[in-house]
Image (tube, rainbow, N blue to C red; front, side, top):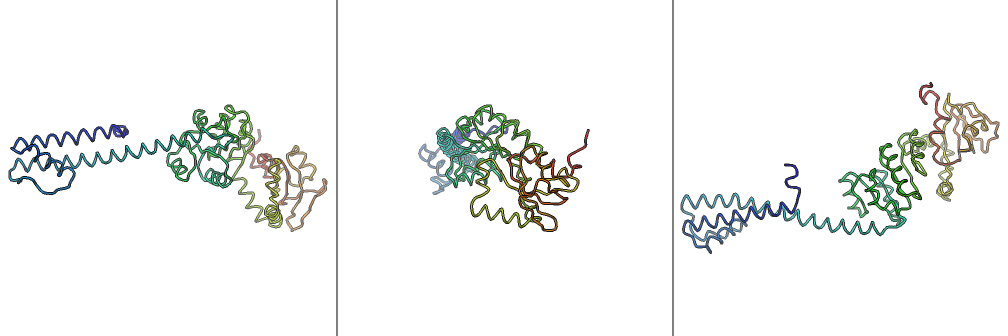
Amino acid sequence: MGGMFDSPVRNLIVGLAFTLSVMVAATLAYMAVGWSFRDAVYMVITTVYTVGYGEVRPIDTPVLDAITIALVLFGCTGIIFLTGALVQFITLNQQGVGLKRMNRQIEELQAHVVICGFGRLGAELARSLMASSAGFVIIEANETKALAAREQGYLCVHGDATKESVLMAGGVARAHALAAVLSNDALNVFITLSARALNADLQIVARGELASTEGKLLQAGADRVVLPTHIGAERIAELILFEASARKIDHLERAHGFQRVLRNFGVELEVVTAAAQSAAARQTVASIERQGKGAFFIVQINRADGTVLAAPDPDTVVADGDGVVLMGRANRASLLAALFEPRQRLGPRG
């Protein structure tokens, strides 16, 4: 029953057949009680289409009353259904033409960006890419979100990005980069694996909700991993605990695009807190950098009493609660969590 009215062509045929059957039956009924063919057809058409210019002959017998009532009920119902089917048919045909045009535009894209997911992060990414005139296509499994993306003028493939056929429809084989920005870490890992298999040269940036997912995404083939929750929490902590350092970094970013320049070289600058009972607390700068295995180096220490140590000596000890300004490679969130967060948060030891 659910799929009975799915086809607009079927609906159009059924509506047309039903309405014509009612009109033919009513015409024959009027003729059977003595009306001419001309009068019967005129009466049926003006009644069915609710024009109602007036009866061509008096409706003064019970039989004529019954014929007319049946014609009004079934004829008007048929016209309403037929009108709806016609609107559905025209609308879907227009959408089909639009989809064909959009698919042609996607097929013409080269060295573009594929965005998997049109949630809040995907929408912001699409807005930024549109502002920079970069070519991109969105892949979204949710029909409502896919429609919203198209209404905003974006090229969008409605489908599951974990399927290789859908990725191919988005032109992943010709793409320069892919952003897996779904809120589900497992799906982002699967998308990364599939995309890497389809295009070995693809630059893949993946979103992760948990720091522990970072390593899995990198192993799956991601070039960079972004942890929005981690980044947001660290940024809030910077602003609250180490306002001077955060303000200085912001000033450099606004004045010179400092952070963007660093990111172009695969380097990032951030402030982390050496929590009490963490691996980094009460360790020297040299020891912490050694445990980091070259992933970062310490450029500044913000003491809890407000003292700022720029370019600290290797023998400088990092105390509990100190803010540590790090410069190093991207995709190191899990390493920083292991070093600077309390040991008991890392889970039970075997």
